[in-house]
Amino acid sequence: MQVVRQTRDGIFTAECVRDKQGKDDNVLSRLSLTALVIAAGLWIAGISSAEELLYEPDVVLVMKDKVFHVVKGIQSENPPANPAFSLPVGRDLVVLLRNEDNVAHEFVSPLLMKVDDLQLSGRATLIYTLTAVGVRVESGDSVLLRFDIPDAGFDQFHFWCNIHGKLLDDTMRGEIFILHAKPSSQ
Image (tube, rainbow, N blue to C red; front, side):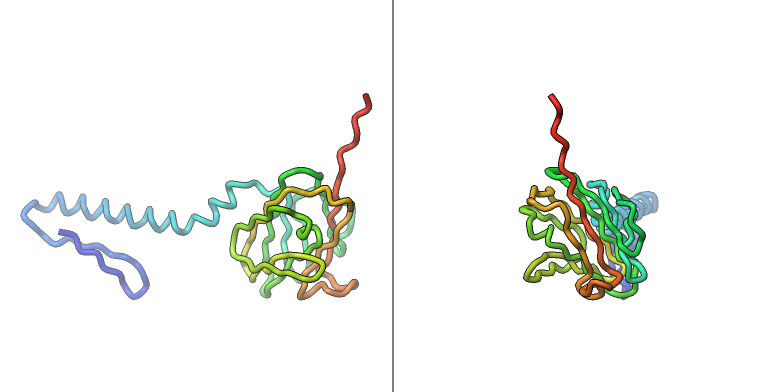
């Protein structure tokens, strides 16, 4: 017979109590239960990383040293002090925000106000201002934003950290450029 107990650390242990079936059945039962507990733990721990693997990010923004760093994505030729990236209009886009700083940061932009269906994956707090929408990302966390880029009538949107980038000369500010498809010459 198997007895499952939870330790103070939250770890499940299983022990077999000898019954009439013998030693071989107890060993097999113990191994199968251990494999089940390990598989369940890996499944629970892998939920967020599986979600991240589901959508390959088009843009990766890292928040580190109180500066936005464009790690992946089409970045214009701007220095890191003024990070910028370009996005094609009318396309489904995935942006990964990764906070590698020791304080919380926010990614806020008027572009996100124009988005109809903003999907979030990860631990974040939605931020609303009078002119923009964004997310607050705690230290060490990552968040996926997924949305269709709207044809908003504008070609340029600013983004900033609402904590460390409110003023124009603050370091946590950047720009998003919307690229429109060139009309075909026929």
